[in-house]
Length: 108
Image (cartoon, rainbow, N blue to C red):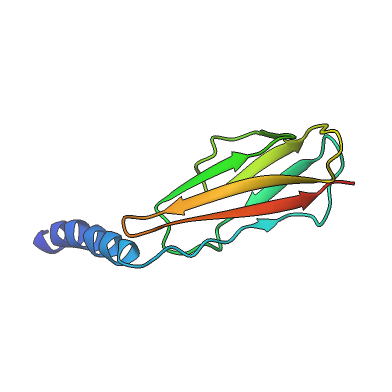
């Protein structure tokens, strides 16, 4: 019984310490190569490393469907006069570092 209690206390602490001791590595991938109006863009940042928090920020011409704070997020492509792309910013953090990347989707 003592072993189970010790493992439940020590293991989460070791995991937390090791993930926060490293700098973040941010990446995100689109589900398609191009989109049309009213399409849903799906971005997946689970390829990022050492992440504690995610913050998705859609720019003009996009509507975010989720909370904006998970590894994956969806966006609806809205009309935007004169623009053939839509930009989404992703900020990832842990206790040691922060990284912001911008991803642009082609709209045809």
